[in-house]
Image 1 (cartoon, rainbow, N blue to C red):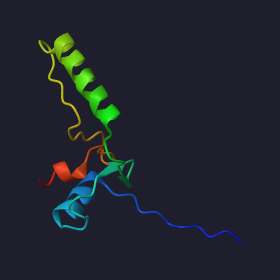
Image 2: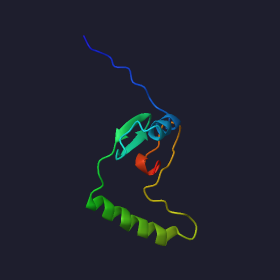
Image 3: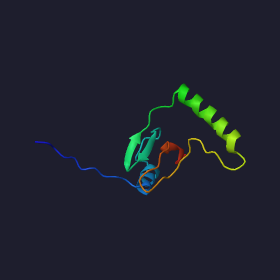
Image 4: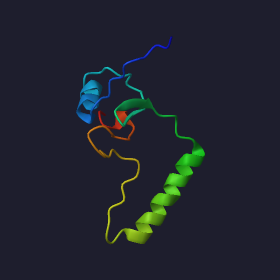
Length: 90
C-alpha cells in the first residue's frame, strides 16, 4: 500500500507574503520554482567567479542596447520566482 502525499503549490504572491510575514528564517536562501519552495545551496568561489566573468562579457557585448541584471529577482510566471528570497525583503 502506498501513501499519497498532497502537495500545495504556492504562487509568487503567497511566497512574497510569507517572507514579509517572517515565516522563513532571516538568513534563508529560498526561491520559488514551479510553485515549490526550494532551498538554494551556498554560492561557492567558482560560481562567483563565473558570474563575474559572464557579467563583464555581457556588459561589454550588449551594454549599448540592454541592461544586464545579474542574480536579481525575476518573476517568470505566477508560480516561478528564482532568486535569493532574502534580497527581496532586506
